[in-house]
Image (cartoon, rainbow, N blue to C red; front, side):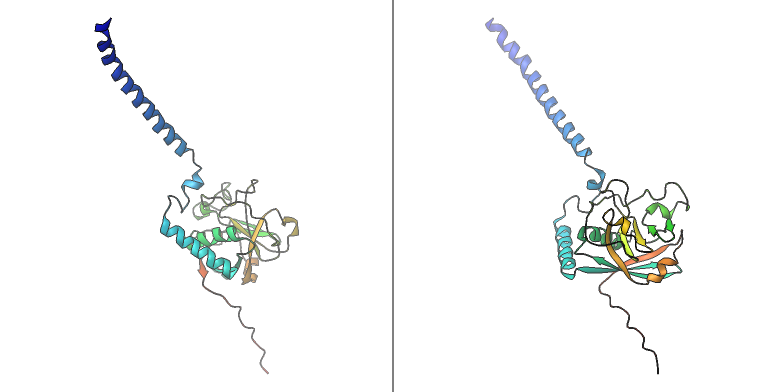
Length: 232
């Protein structure tokens, strides 16, 4: 019996090493599988992976916006003119930040209005509108790849108000927005309003399906045009 113990030990040692390697391999594969289950929106977030410098910059911008309480975007609609949109950073900070980031990324440049309902809303923000023909059943289903949470506030669906379009899930808003053509109090509380048109509001009545957003830019500041006094 004593002569068999060294032989058994020599046989068990490779087996234990093999078992340990197998356990380690399984752990790595499990970690990889867990990583792959992270939602796409999180993986595609501009803040992932963590970049300390960019995160600091984003925080600084957010603080500046919060102090200002409002931000302005100029949206140029081809052959129609400019809309000046005032974003309410106090009532809808996260929704406004999402819209501002998309504007800075030039996401809306070249996108077309795919939905126009008279006496109701005009709607745009689906990137598929750049390539798909108007009337295509898939239009209205596209987004930026990132959803934002529903942000209830006190803003109302007044004429010229801008809100986020979404699916049935309240947290499904992404990049599509709408502008109210008239007061729509029946929508209050069901969708997130985050701003309003403060200049060029007459243009929203002229928008038709297929009209193109040539470009959208964030303005450093905006002041209302001074009313022209009638000459004597």
